[in-house]
Image 1 (cartoon, helix red, strand yellow):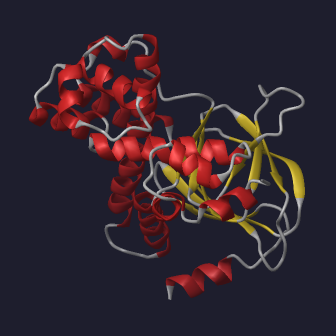
Image 2 (spheres, helix red, strand yellow; image 1 turned 90 degrees about the vertical axis):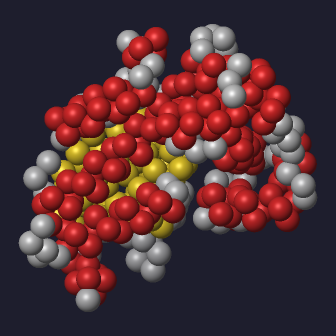
Image 3 (tube, one colour; image 1 turned 90 degrees about the horizontal axis):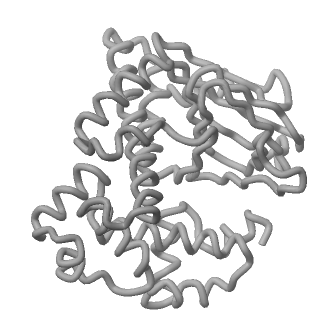
Length: 304
C-alpha cells in the first residue's frame, strides 16, 4: 500500500530532479527522480543534507574543485552529506525515462544535529580530540550500507503513514541517522589524526597499526601489544568509539582502498591479492556485500 501510494506521488511532473517531499518537525525526507541526462544541476543545502543514492549514477562537483576536475561519482549503496550553507552541482549522465536516477534526501535542522553531536562527543570522552573535531568537510562521501538503507526505508514509511506517534518515531529515526553519520565522521577523523600523531593515545595507535598493515592478516595479540591495551579493553574501545571490531574495520578499509584503486583503472584480480584477500572470488563476495554490486560492475559504473 505504501509502495503504491509512493509510486503514484512520484509520477513525473518534470524530467530533472522531480521532487516528492514529506515534511516533519525538524527534518524533511524527499525523493528526487531525474528522467533525462543533465549537467551542472545546482543543489543548495540550507540545513544539513543527507543524500542516499537509490538508483543510477551521479557525478558531483564542488565549487572548490579544480576547473578540470572530473568530479566525484556516486552510485547506489553510497551517500553524501552536504554541510549547511554549502552548494554542489550534479551531473546525471545516464538518466532516462526507463531508468531514472533516484536519490533520497533527509534535511535535518542545525539544532537537531547540534544536540546529538554534543551528546556523542560527551560519550566519546576524548578531550584531546574535541577541540579539533567537527562535523566534517563541506561534502562528506560515505558508503550507503544496508543498515542505513533499512533506516531510510523506515523513515519513508513513517512519513507516509498517519501513525499516532509518527513525529516521535521520525525524530528517533533521524537521531539514529545523525549518530551513524557522526560515528562515521569520528572514525575518519581518528584515522586522519593517527597519520599526524600515531602515538596520541592507545586507540589512535591501534588505528594507525591497522591502517598501515592492510594487506596482512590482523594479529589481535600483536595489535594489543602495539596499542598497550588488553584484548577486552581493545574491543570495548573499538565498539564505543569506532562502532565495529578491529577485524571489521580492517575489512572495510581494505574494501574502500580496493574501490579507489578499481576506480583508478587497476585490475580487479591484482587489487584483490595485493590487499590480502584469499582469492578473487572471496574478494568479489565481500565487495558485493559491502557495495551492493560485484567489482566488475562497480568498475563499469565508474567508467572504467
